[in-house]
Length: 139
View 1: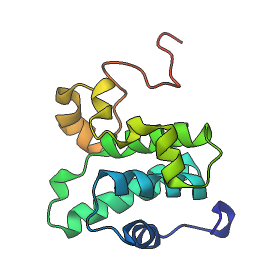
View 2 (view 1 turned 90 degrees about the vertical axis):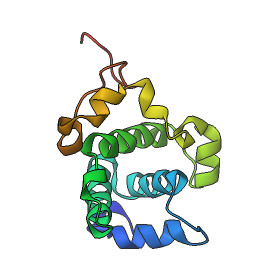
View 3 (view 1 turned 90 degrees about the horizontal axis):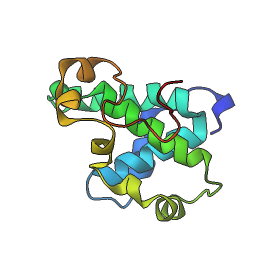
View 4 (view 1 turned 180 degrees about the vertical axis):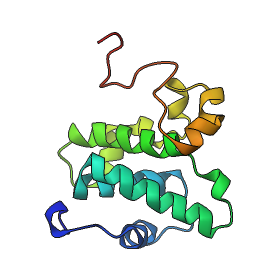
């Protein structure tokens, strides 16, 4: 399905990512995000992935585990790198950008205090330690 064919259903992405996977770990999160970005663009993927992950957290009885800043930051990072890559293969993509498979990557941009804040859980916070690769401080 391409971006112009309408809304991309989150359950379809989950099913595709979970084929052959035993659990929904960090690699599957990144894979799902990469698929969403490639198919509908970063802006739409932010909404799709954030809403989907928030729904999963509620369904699992742990809505407090959802973090709006973490969800959007990962989509932004994956989207940035996907825009620099012309591969249609997720394995090749992660070979090109292996740092995306490091679940602690956000600690380069955010302090743990910022990410644990109530504000980060409910809305977008800009990085407090270092700008993202596409951002420039002071502009």
